[in-house]
Every structure is written in structure tokens, then in C-alpha cells.
Length: 177
Image 1 (cartoon, rainbow, N blue to C red):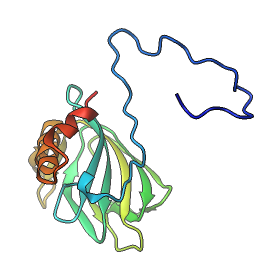
Image 2: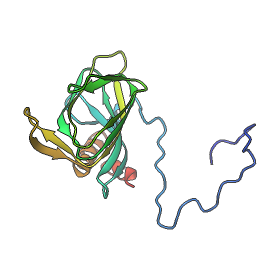
Image 3: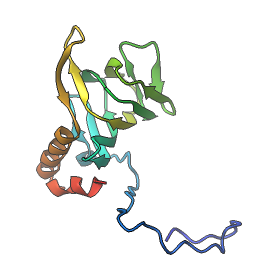
């Protein structure tokens, strides 16, 4: 139950009793998602890490917070599906575009768009909330496919990291829905 209402107009409203449908799973609630506890950030590249927040192995989708504490780079790639991003802090962009995102900025990536994600030096670390659907297709210098990264690759990477830092490999399973 959330905190008790005081003066809100709905203070006498009772919660519904049938919260979940028969086969529904509980929500994922995570306080302080962009935590400063770096154990929760899985190294994605040498300069960028990812904190998984929600993972759907069956839909090949995930939500995460991408973080770079200083200048960072994510390999060239494209997404065959849309991606949504919301900037929490820091400064980032794509080498292929004329904008630079800072705190409060929203980005919608169209399916099939290739780009090179870079994080800039900034007084605050780059922290960006991403909702990713489907794989990342790695690209070579000419923009041609050169491998992939999908939800199953991500899960394995998370399990290995969480086991290594003492959180436990099974922690990632609590994010599956």
C-alpha cells in the first residue's frame, strides 16, 4: 500500500481487490533506478555500462539506464525496431545527427536507423533511460552488418557481471516479465 493520503480528494477511495488478472505477473518496482551503486551497472563497452530495469526474454525487449562517467562510446549499430530514450543526466548524441541530448531530452529512434552513440565529458555522468525492442545489429566502418546483440546476449552478460560483483547471477531473473 502506498503512503496514506492526507488531504488529497481521493483519500477515502479504496483500492481494487482484483489487482492482477489470473496469469499476470507482478509489476517491477525499482526505487532509485539511476542509482550511484555501480555494481548494478553491467559493462556494455569499455566506457559505457547498462543497468537493466526490465527484461522480456520472450519479446526480445528491455529497459535500461545506460551510463558513462566520462567520454564514452557504444559501437556503431542499428535497430530493426524503434527505440525510446529519455536523458536523466549528462550529455550524449549520435555522430550521425545534429543534436546533442542533455537532461530532460527525449529521443525516438526510427527502425533501421544506423548510428554511433557517444557520451561527452560533462560534470554529471551520462545516464539515459532506454526502451529497446529487438536486437542491435553491429555495423562495420562502412555501415554493413557485423554481428548482433540481443536480449539473450544481454541476459548472459548481466548474469556474468552480477555473479562477479557478488549480487548473484539470478538477480537478473527478478527483472523478467
